[in-house]
Length: 98
Ligand SMILES: [Zn+2]
Image (cartoon, rainbow, N blue to C red; front, side, top):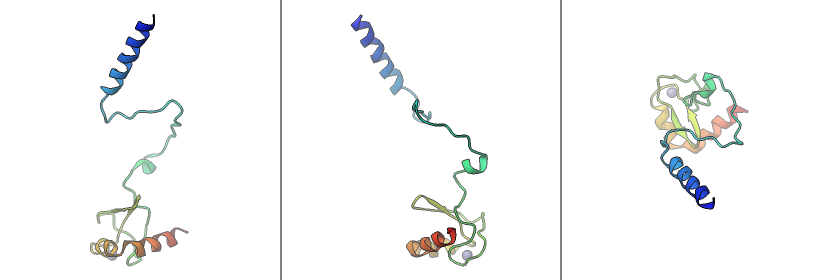
């Protein structure tokens, strides 16, 4: 009886490791919350106003990911300015959020 159980356990382990890596794995106690498409889109910047020039951001300008934030800019060049002194501009972003 013990042997059968052990064989089953080994089979489970093998089956578990052969799952494709990109398949999401959910724990039994994990809550699944429905979100709308906008919230689901990982490429939505946290800001609506450029931290450099204070103008509305242009979504054609590539976003930057700084820390775990996605930041948008109003024109090319502002992203470079941000990269030169990200901490300063990040503070500006944080102030505007409040
Ligand atoms: Zn700009």
